[in-house]
Length: 270
Image (tube, rainbow, N blue to C red; front, side, top):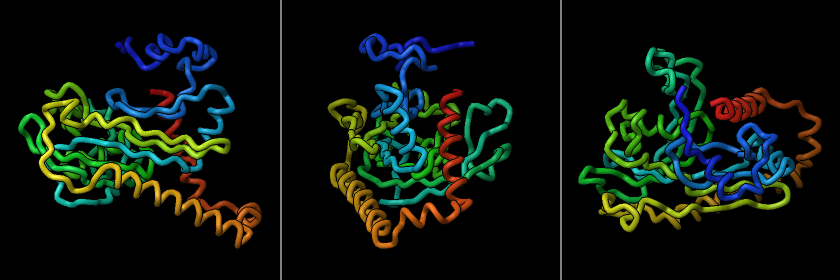
């Protein structure tokens, strides 16, 4: 069995040895995961209580995440919602992959939704690409990579979901840019600097702007805050908390929570 030796765990342990926790499976209390070749913001809890607080936010779907990506081709629609259900690929030689519903060998596909906003059109090493902001509204394994591939615009450098064709870039161009976790004691909100700029990678040459990144993120923040305010008002005006305690939980809510718990379990076993 092959294992990568230069891991996030090993780098964290070298840089912050005092924060390592030998009682945990990975040596640190990771609150969520990023794919191996995805860069960006990742939440690591400092203690068990903090981990529990963050986990509850993920479980209750209160976390907001947004990713930057360079995808192959020029995406024609400036905004789109991708709703392909995703399941495990059971085809021989592809069991490490996920797939969309309708694909031969697709097992147990579940509803998934991703939002895509075009930021810039340009080129990478002379080939047409689009810089996009992606927001996963569900949490299936490899969701953004599968969804981008499904609409005909695979992520630049994604060797797996380009079906072993895209091997020339030095990395997969997917970056966890924005992370918001509203824990009970504090609001955790971070942006990991955008790596897809010409100053960082001269192969990327933007040609036209569809939406500005800072304005798009602010729009996302405003929507989240507005939703939280509306839910808070409903709870006060309608005795929402009391009503929630007395009413039985709907099957949909239970299913959503089960999916979230399964998602957390999936990465823990990988």
